[in-house]
Length: 139
Image 1 (tube, rainbow, N blue to C red):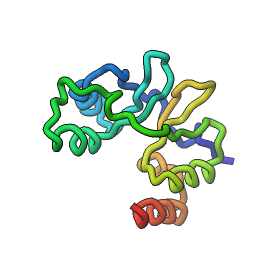
Image 2: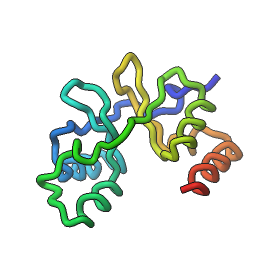
Image 3: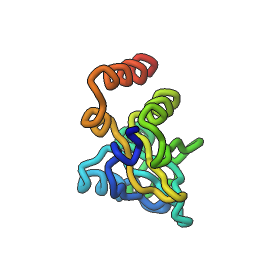
Image 4: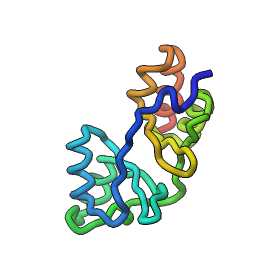
């Protein structure tokens, strides 16, 4: 059985909820990623922020990325998977919530992320094609 732990990339770095979107953008650049988990001062996952969030919900709205915080973009329920989730459970969760990246949690702590690139590296072509169809066809 292939699990979330088997396909995730380890070492996901969080942006703290009180950090600015400018800091988040710099971290994304330096880490060469398109999203960051948002961690609260309680070290728990509070959300996820994407480069698109920064552009659409901050820059395009005329907000100041040097003033707006990651917490201001964190909204709604946080979707995540546990390390022991079977890959089919991971795909089902991502498809159900229409997300292209998902944080991986173990013992209430962030331990990794699963992105489309991770799926592409680990899934058979047919399974990856079905995921892409199910996520993008409904977007």
